[in-house]
Length: 377
Image 1 (tube, helix red, strand yellow):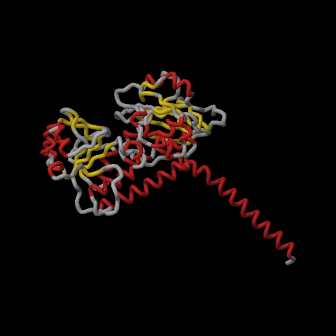
Image 2 (cartoon, rainbow, N blue to C red):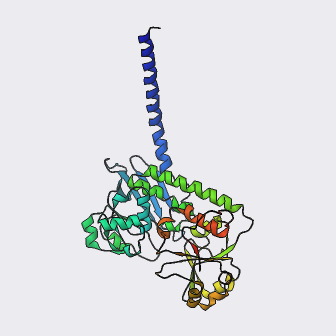
């Protein structure tokens, strides 16, 4: 075969291969979008791909017939579809948002969408260094209180959306009256840690960071499943109680909450597993003290400028001395003013699970150093 003819056939072969690759990629893209849109763990979030837009349905989770809000995510440069159903239209990717809770702002940073943040609320409680940097540089403004932000500052910054967390019994009307779309994310009411973490897919769609959100969620699920499998092999399941009394009442996580289920995945048994609820449940101090002698571990989250000790804890409430974890020095504390617990763990439950496995089963993770919790001194 003449050399020039050989080169012609080789060039033709390369051209055919290139066209096949283009065809395969074009066939794969709709499937990839569907994978990004679907949810597998979240109960209060639904994402559906429609013709020309994505429909996101968010539930508040407060009751069986919980209120639902529909958001219609339409690409910024595309014309509005003529068949849009009733819902709040959001032009994506969002370029200017106010995040009322730092947990959602920190997630936006994780997804590489920190430039979209133009406002933050409750800034006195922010400890994430990335968010602090946004405030110092002026890229993000202090908007005041989360449920009553400064209307003048908000108007001056022209946000395209306000992202907040609905709370049962607290009206969002002051926010909705500001004339900016309000995205009410009740992710904290999910029934599983991975269900809450999966909300990052919604945030990825909002900000044009779907691929990054999918990649991060894959990291989270892989690590979480590996840790829970290892904890399940432990021979014993220690019993635990959490938090501490506020006056005569004691708020504990409901047994249906994502936090209680995370502790279960860490290989522990909840002393109050009969107390149903996806949020917190209020118990009388006497009830907790009466059953506290059955607990092996006591987990406490608090936010204060001082450090807790066994004596200061007992000074708050003498009844603590009768709790078995207090007597046996098996109390672990997390000061949320010094570690980014609230800004990291909701969407990185694998990091919190690692701490819990270390606390409940130290032999499973002998080389892990606690990230959020520390033994009470």
